[in-house]
Image (cartoon, helix red, strand yellow):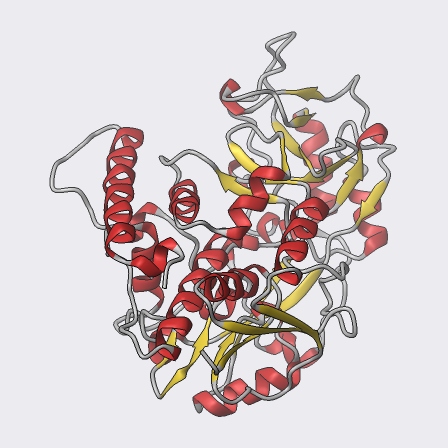
Length: 443
């Protein structure tokens, strides 16, 4: 194979795309602008940097994201391989040590004989077979080129990351360890509120000072529901947080059995167990306000904040209008998009999108028929959703059971119903892999 595949972007989608194509024999050039240039949310010089959270969500197949992860494992996903090796305790969820996760992937990509990594910002779409996987933080020059190519303006929404605190600064005489409903091991640290403490915290939160945004961006701001800043959520109503990130249900004190008015959960951030992030506390508060208000959380009065939350603009394209289910651009079949740029929202969803783009870019380069996954699989449902031309107001989508085909039979138990759907999906995926050598890493 003389021609090469160019992958632009070294995030989760980009590394999966590069690795999937390279293991089939394609020569891949992967462009990543770091460390020469960083987006507002990136700090590490490694590939596959995790930004908002270290959690890859639920791990059971009765969880939609858990099903997608299991399909990725069947397909030989590089990111899932790394996730298992860098895993940290998180109950039923799969959470990772960010640095170890990225370091493993970086080493595998940079040492692959078919992959060349170039540290350079790409401001124009390269010629030839190309996968654009620059993510929701695509640099402005390239974003303008993409908008020009697609004949429309890019769409924007805003995304936010949660703060991280030092474990040894958490007051464990106030907090306690427990997983919700006692499911799995007690890996979460819980910060309990009385009603009086919650009321005082709530009032400060809704009146806090926000970090400034550029005027042009404020005019067209769209906040994605799945990553909504906690202060935006709070302003929807006094009880909104009690049904969201501060939900106390299923979290009584394991010693006294006392139930609380509200609870903030902290999740382990690294394998050394020295850092914890505030679950669901993505924010756009100024750094001084974060220190002041989040120190009102019981047990965090003297917390050391190792990283404050940040908010940044995200970019995604109108996938139903522009993309085929193969991740190809309709009017430019040699060009593929992958990851959150396509409107798949979430780490695991980005991995899946990148994997498909990598395989299909190789097949296109080889003159072979491209693949789409069976509709019954999580892969197939996710890609079917984002390329559904009947969708009028397209919004980024996380993997969920609502986009998978319904069962013919009626099963009252939600967990049993989801498990049945998941088992059908996995059987379909196993059969599809057996029927397509490219999914087994074979030419």
